[in-house]
Length: 503
Image (cartoon, rainbow, N blue to C red; front, side):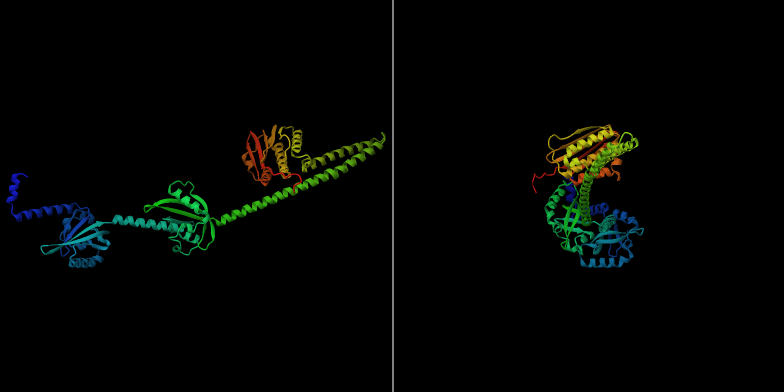
């Protein structure tokens, strides 16, 4: 410190030093008040304004010069002035130096233009020269109030929305149900949320799904779960088991991971699906039974045509030949009638054979599937002039009667469709088999079926072929592009052939 400054300090008396210190302290306090971001207002014992800082000017929309010496009540709503006066009087009597004002530290103030707004306030008192001064520090919380109100309205809208959602919703936090909507209360069989809140979700998830639920929670928490929807079963408060679809997701809530689950009761839908499946199975069984009965009836009629009507026509042909031999050459008219009758009988015999064969080739039962397919293909080629490349298994090919009939009928229908619609010049037929399956493939180089025709409701030929494959537990696929031909492939499981003599 310079010697000159030391001499000046030493020359000052103690009262002067105190005055200078007080001036410096007042200057610092004034600087703090002027630069404070909160409004600072000091009033005397009569509640007249003595200090009004720039932040107060901005908050209330008026200048300090216009309000100094005026009552503070101008910034208090009329309805609250009497309460404010009593509060200040009581505060002055207590001797407490600092206190927050208003319920939850919030009161209502009035700007110079009459606008009311919420503020947080604290008050302090100090005695100067035997007189009390009260200082109020105010903070405008209008923006915070608006944000809180917006958040509250948003929460209320969310709550109303969640309550209106027909699906059940619950939120799990710390392995406990922390929230559920009205639909969830109804789904779980409760009369109020109180019976469910705070309980473990596992109390309502069927025990068969506990392990799955645990693994799913781990994957959701780690962000590894890619399928948000799955089927589960829940157990209601009354013990009833219901089928549900559950969509779940995880989110961070209050520093921990929570889970939101949306549950949809699908019990009735599942029951309806089961009934539809059962009905389809029954219809399929009925269809299979009808096919069997129809094939048996066709076989019976075919044998009766072949045996009885065929034998009768053959006998008639022999009798006619005997009568014709007894005619003399001079009986030209009678000989002409006899020859015409012979031709008619031969045509009738051929028609009977054709009808019987179309009903059911007797060779299918007598000679087997391979011989019958070879005859069918040759007959098709002769009638239509379409070249057929046939590939059959070598050696023995054991097929049960039901499968044999289905394969023959599918091939028969395929060749009929080719002759009627395909306009093909070549057909390739392949029958193959493994230890487990049998496959029939028919490919032509015709005009193709087309997607619209394949899916049309009136394509009973394709529907019938698919039904035959389905009845055997197999499938029939059709691949076709216009101009490139059509491929029909039937694949069925090979039935176990019982040993000879087995019951």
